[in-house]
Length: 428
Image (cartoon, rainbow, N blue to C red; front, side, top):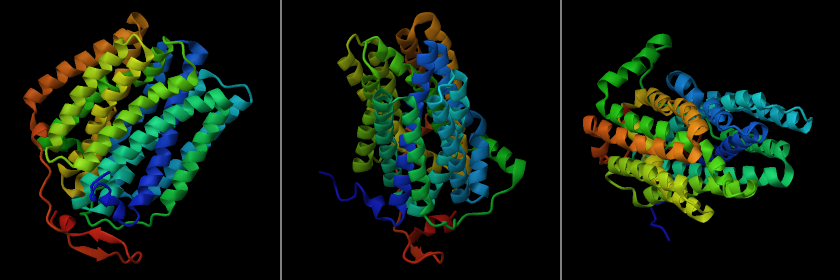
């Protein structure tokens, strides 16, 4: 069914644990991202309030990306990841308790979603950087494709589980299950030993953060990658909270709304698995083509007159997002030296962080024109602006997979039997 190399990163000791931890945390994250908008719509019926749930979830990306990247480069990534779980898990349990007590109000969901969004910052700048430290440069393409595959299946199952749990057991139990998934994630992640990074010491404090911003003046390839990321998030992903509102015009229940939303994850799974299997040499081209495909078919989803057709259009759009998502992080990490990877991922997080602004504006547009029309206008505008940007900064489209020589390895003194890539770090 697949070539022997499709899952080669899974042979690296402890990478499967990192993958499982990220997957279970992703199940919770995407489940919460479905439950939050559902609560907002049930309590208010407002597209604006639904979009504000997305704003709350993604706002930490905008404001915390660079700081999160500096923290990732400066401090113990493993410890910071565990600390974020110790904040988000109690928050979910408190929110579920308000539903059981019958005092849940719409304003309560926004701070919990904000904390979940902060956890996403630490996951992107911390856990994914740990993946690179662990698997080395020759395995990173495969590892990040598997990461994206895990993320997409978590999105699909999380959204479907959120809708199904609401229909079967209610909002309170749905939130409790999401907290339980995070408990599994932190226990699994804690089983991964501390990984000693072979990198240059990073500057401390404000200087390190400003140095991260200065990278935008010197790293032309990084700028090109981040520009595409910003366009896709501002104009495509901004519409994702509206998926279930568009789905409501077909007069279906929470479970089928969750199934519709899960098409986003299913399609991303197909796209990501394609990258993991084929490992395309024209990595940048895959990144850009996937983005344009997502814009095109998202417009088809918003315009579809039937539930099945809408689901199919969303699935194909998400396949494009799978190509985009499975190449994005590794493009960023490969565009800079190893000692700057955390900050580069922080800049990526900040580029993704334009998403809440897009959500806010799209929510206002949806209030005036309706969700379907607003989505069509958004993705069409995104495709046009991204085309113009790539005419000015085409570097990411031309990026190829680097030829990586066989790596020297060593057994880390912290524990027996774990193999790490050394040479790429020593040559930095």
